[in-house]
Image 1 (cartoon, rainbow, N blue to C red):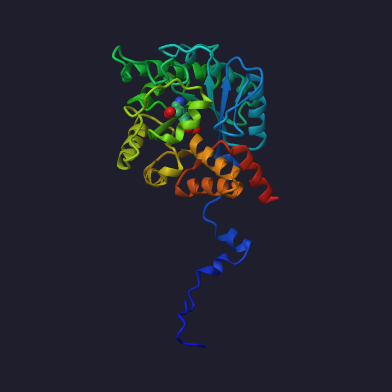
Image 2: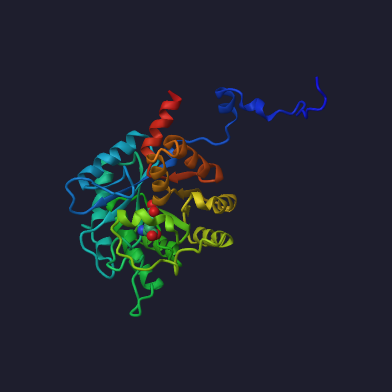
Length: 333
Ligand code: PBG
């Protein structure tokens, strides 16, 4: 044996990569449909689903097509669905968010009728889809987002969603004190079992771009006075600690892929389950690259969601949830 070639000797990590069975045996992270949540858009007044051009394959649902979509999600064995409503009419305080006949509330009720407890039925609890200015809260006369006045609206919104049958309300507005106020409102009205998902570490991100088209956002400007600065890592731990102290049942990091360091930090310290949201821009980037033939779509989707789980997410909100669940089934079969 030529002695001038370097040799790894007895220590050969490649041994545990030799066969599919060996790789499966030592895989540290697994994907399971139960750990996937599908975000869904429902738009008032539609009779047919309407495509969202910046999110190929994702649509704004009509009430009717939403019912089919949630049934499909339940059949796929997903963990849940997260509903977003797009109302016909918007105003300064987002009246449609709290109206019992508002699109999000009726869609929640439809979903409960359709799938009952087969899925965790969740709704976005935020005002941006309902306000004419597109901010996540109500505004002061000078146009700033009024934190405490917004909390009053969130409490009402939580009650409207609980009455409609939501199992979990997803607070995505990044107002200070939102978890505590919503928990108090739910408890006060007897909704002790309605859980609170806090979008605790939610960053002011360019990756929400396609979502703005999906909900026909009217926002001019940005959300930097309430969503977190992408430069900050330590602050996520603070936000998570506050939300848990206020009673959050699940906390979230959002976006996912550009924030895996944050996700790993949060997963290491959180005492409650950790969710991550693979947002619209993350979806659009992979779809666009795959449409150009630049990456292998299925492998890129799988790898991105797996990475989010590996970094520490217990479950992942992803627009690919149903398709991904189908792939996982094929692998097991
Ligand atoms: C706020 C909300 C947003 C998203 C989820 N909830 C938009 C925002 O904060 O600007 C973005 C989700 C995505 O991009 O997929 N209602």
